[in-house]
Amino acid sequence: NFMLTQPHSVSESPGKTVTISCTRSSGSIASNYVQWYQQRPGSSPTTMIYEDDQRPSGVPDRFSGSIDRSSNSASLTISGLKTEDEADYYCQSYDSSSWVFGGGTKLTVL
Amino acid sequence: QLQLQESGPGLVKPSETLSLTCSVSGGSFSSNRAYWGWIRQPPGKGLQWIGSIFYGGSTYYNPSLKSRVTISVDTSKNQFSLKLSSVTSADTSVYYCAMSISGRIDFWGQGTLVTVSS
Image 1 (cartoon, each protein chain N blue to C red):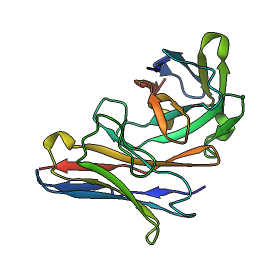
Image 2: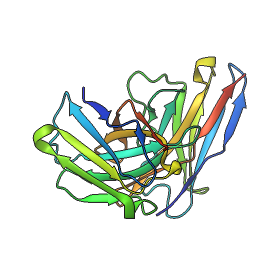
Image 3: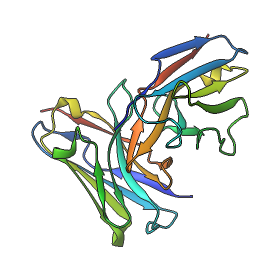
Image 4: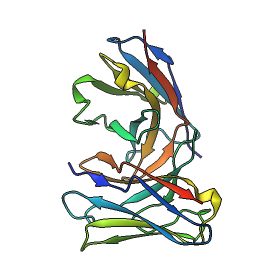
């Protein structure tokens, strides 16, 4: 199986744009869709992006996802940062019926 | 809207078996495309997939836990279960049950904290 590697933490100011990366260790990032989940303290994760770049209804269009085959990574970009975006973010993919999670990135909006 | 709810003891002694049940309501438990799984999160740490069971009964486990994990399903009760044997303090976590159809986690339970301590 492969691993997904995320930065441990990122920080940015309100109104700015931040990008969180998720690098796949082996196999192509394009082989299986990548999802992004937001988790606030004490709550279950919620889906922000699915199938690489799709936004569920109700998720602001400030959130966008993409994949980059050259770096074998996926990215979550949040524009127009708000203090309410401060949370942990996890990327997730799958392989042979296994669910694989990245280690999570703590986003601080300061 | 599908709802998942974990239940089980919040405290388990070291070396014993952790047992949790996930009750599913509000939708079809018998979808022939659904994977029902367990995910855990140690305090202050990230998410770890434990294992999943497919509608047809096939099971898939995290290799790091495979020797200690059993996941089963009871379709008559709309439930699936997790058993994790020989627990240690390292198994103290919030345990989530979840459902996936196409590789993404479509629905999550609210999570239940299980502490391993004597």
